[in-house]
Image (cartoon, helix red, strand yellow):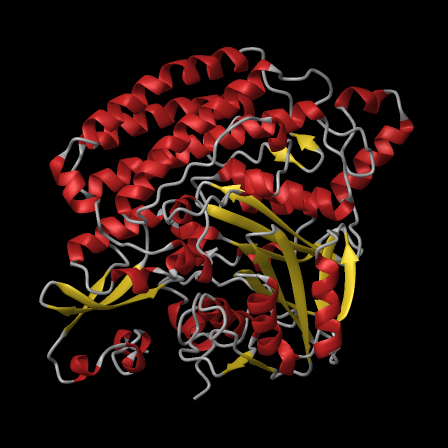
Length: 410
Length: 170
């Protein structure tokens, strides 16, 4: 089979381009899958009239890893390892969504301490993810030094994750029923050091971008969609909040104790690339606020559930209790069963609504685990909002939707 | 389940014979495939479910009737309600009407249904594979599709493995 047979040819996409493309009046051009501004392996087939985008046809799936299929072959505990690999900038958030889904399916309690630590990490992860977004988005728009400033700070968050989970990115730190282990003693100092110094960094970023005429020219009035359009297209998260819809699952459907914390849902009315930038910059402050509150009243107590049918007993008990040995053996060989039913668990990832549809069949493996990933859904609006803009603006729009291709392709 | 959902379930039951149920405080209704477009329109226009949050399917092979369940998650942003609709589909080559005219973001979800489950979505403007390569054979998320491994091709066994690879059917 030759390469030309494998590629999607002009013929197969004929129905998606305009009449003018057939006569050669407009130009068909591939952008990606290997292109620095598509933030991963996203391929866009562009129909161009000069420099104006007539049609933009996204082609995804280059990073498809079959995670949903693979999870069906693993027990509930083992399947969690793969959730990190979905959205590799939101690993803790994926763990959280998955653990909450399993806990809801089997009706498992989570101690208050574990819930608070989960919230701290979910918010740290949100900051880290927004930092990568800001770094790459600004880099695309020719503000190169942002990249170094942002990655410098992100490194500090990854260090905190490494301190607790032993891993910088692929943490698998949350487990059904709580956490893998308790946070170390130096955790609180490290997080406080970060949240105390970070507001100054945000000022630095805003100073570099908010008065930068190139950045403003390339973001203001570009890629506009209204709140109604966004809702109809299923857009969620900061991308939708940039269009004036105050929709945040942490407020609407609180999970993991988010209802205890006082924070604001940031919205901007304009709906353009700059509004989405402003929303995420303000969300840095809200995340810091949540982390500070969670740290201040971090409860003591167990870090995982005491329900031995779902959570393995502490190592120390194995030498004394026969029952603990049985539980340990059962959980690590077979796993725990879940009822023959299904649930849908949505959480707010840095990109929007991350939903886990989890179905059990009475056995120890998920019968079906579908991931409703925000990048996949948000990307669908791209062809609509990029029509009539310049190719250079397209780069800004892709950046502003904040997609992660691991999240899109699963 | 929130009390505001009861009238919605009642409406679905009287109009389309949907069977409501509940699990872990989540409401759902099962209805036939021919009603799904009308039901989606009713939910959006009369009950304020303005977002199609998620759309996927579950394969119950070796069951035949129904073999698959298509699962829709609707969200009402104003009243903060969620509702799940399930559509059972029979047989190995099921068909499902598209809800794109009601919720435009169903487009890629329905392409994924075709790609992963082989559900042929009728009235879809662009039913191509979305995640798998265009020449892929089979629908990976079906339960009768093996969780296989691709053998690594080295120079000494390149030809041998190449001959065993699945080919497009046409």
